[in-house]
Amino acid sequence: MAYQFIHIEAVSKAGRDIYRKINRERKKIGNTSIYSILGEAGRYNGYIEHVENPLPPVIIFGDKEKSVESVLEKITEWYENSKDSRGHKVRVDANALLAGVVSWPPISDNEDENEYLEKRELFEADLIKWLKKVYGDDLKLVLRHDDEPFHGLNAGKIHYHWHYFCVKKSGQKFNLHPGFLERSKYDVPRKDRKNMIKEEYSEILREGKKAYREAMIEFQDNFHYELGRYHGLNRMGPMRIRRSRSEQVELEKRNEKELAYPKKVMNEAIIMKNDAISTQKQAEIIIQDAKKIKDTAENEREILINEGKNIKEKLINEANNKSKNIIDAAWNTANNIYKIGEKKANEIFKNAKEIIINCVNYISEFQYGNKVVDRINKFLKIPDGSEKEFKEELKNEKNKKQNESKKNSAQKPQMDRTY
Image (cartoon, rainbow, N blue to C red; front, side, top):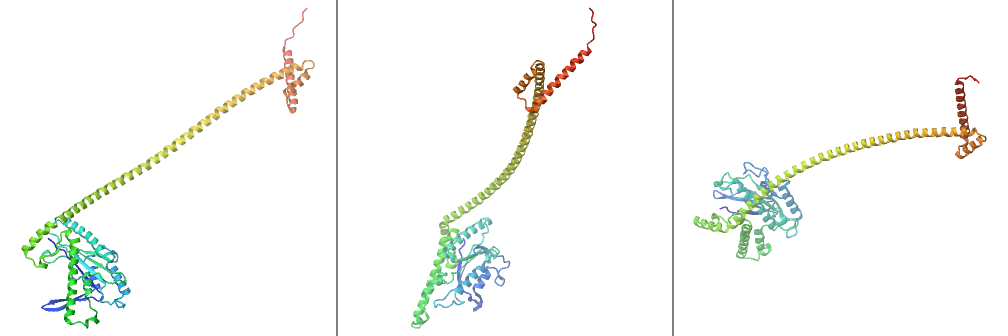
């Protein structure tokens, strides 16, 4: 069974020296500062000699473009606008950054890689929720390293781990480290130390260290209770608490029972996630099919609209042509009827005119016939301009008949008179 690992430390610009015993001698091996921690987290040259094949960090939360540069900007702003307890500008050795590291255990030899990565993703999502709950707006950046291998028994396996960074707002007191915060309650001002005996001051220092340890134990317990246990992580390993192998096996069996429900919940969550992914893929396929159907329908709609327009225009043209032909035919028929009527009317008028002329000529031969003709003209109301023409026409018609009569008489054979 794997064990949880979370580590935090408060860091300043000036940093603190790191010492290690080498050949029984305490020697300085480096310095931990804001720059070294952010440089290693951001994979900057000069800070990653321990990584053979460095990869860019995966930003999980925060400014993905600026990465650790965004954290450094917040720290610089805090140093420039914050004061210490005496009202002086804070010194470069004042802690301004809380840096945390959280590790994920290596993959087991018989564990499926996909399931292993799914568990890591679930833990990562819950880790972000927990960090937001604990640090709120002070949480500025969370990133993951995928390029550091384990050493020893798990050599070669990827050591997935997360770095997170918290910075206070400008002007606010740095109180992000729970251990330092509790220990600060036992700080004694320099002026008061002069009035204390050595044993009294030593006792206060011991109480302060105890408060620091208890605060850090509570911090680890809280991480385990709210996050670690739900992902199959033990609170402590056998080396830390010096258990025997048999005691550790017994403890792991008991923990297995206690963690059965969280594991069940986690497995159900994985199943639900897989179902959700499958449903999402099916939904994407349905959406694509629907889009194709929509595109096809729109194309067919355009085709039908164009065909409808063409048919409409064709029908309109045919109707216009037919109506034009009908109108033309009607006009031709009417024109023919008019011409026929006009011709017949002219014939009737001509016949009537001949009859009237004959009648007038016949009447004019009688005594006082001219007077009757005048009365007829008045009765017919012949215009003044036309009376002369009408009389002239009557005269011409009369002369024409007389000439025909003479001609006929001249053509008759002369008969001898025999008595």
